[in-house]
Image 1: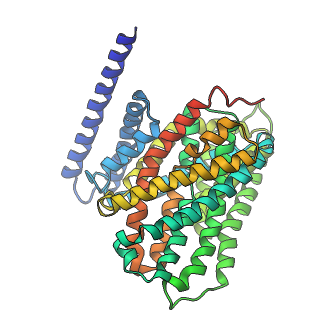
Image 2 (image 1 turned 30 degrees about the vertical axis):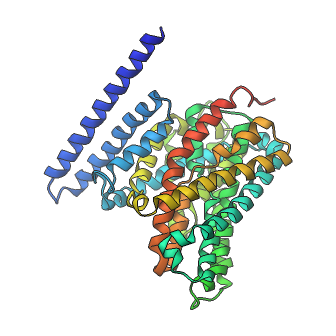
Length: 442
């Protein structure tokens, strides 16, 4: 039986690999032969390519025991500008609206997983876990950045005060985790229980905390990095708009949509309503310049906890989640710059290992203080390694704010993100499977 199973697995791996190679070859050939004026059709072809290739790669990854989204990300990297160039920079940018729509649905799914009734008993673990990981990673990573400063050219050239400012920014940046990657792995495994609630709760709350602290830190250290800049109290207003505005807006829109969904199980609203609502979130947040991920998380949270139809909404998103995840994470992979690894590979490896170790220390100790089960406190760090779109967005803010060192910071951070986005989901799936026997709700 074992031999037959192994032969079947090898046959499936070979079959999926051949089909995936054929899809890449055909799409690459069509790209070479397409005329410049066929841009609209070209985007249609690339959208289909992303969905088909990512689905095949996800199946391939699942067959060998990896999370499906690892396959999604890898196929995006292979198709992106750094490797084959099938998805060039302009193509990735053209597909950004669909990508944001997918992010809105994923974030609503994440918010919908935060059920008040379940989370109330885990509130102490989530609060202390968030505080512990944030502080330990922030301080520890800032010290690590200063320690490797002589080996990183753009940092070595800076005066100590400026290097300290960059270290503090990268420290709080490193404390961020990815709600989108986390919810994708949880949905794939179907995991539920204390471990899942704590990890997802810490990830989402920490996302908010890091955005707030990053914005404040950026304003405070700006004079250290660039003496021509001065601290401005205007940052508090911008922060209130970006974070507070996103949470309030999401809560209001979620409440309105929950009223639309109603509570009549015999006459459920069509699933298309949820997708139109997600698109509405993309449009409104873009116009008001507030954080889409936080808005959608708040909306999903309110819908799930206020409307009896909330579960139906979540199940509706879950029914197409594989397609959503495939597209979103393939585009995320295509956005990564592999050239950064060549320039900062060793420094990034040090930072990645240090971040993982600090996350382990911070989560294990804080969750023990919170009285979390040993299985949760011992394994939670594995669910907090992933980094995603918000993490990259924070680095882009540094680049835009400080043009002289921005490209170096982005390249270094991109190398760390590459490791986190590939290894993080694998660690989380491993932890979910390891705690499956112990992580049962009472």
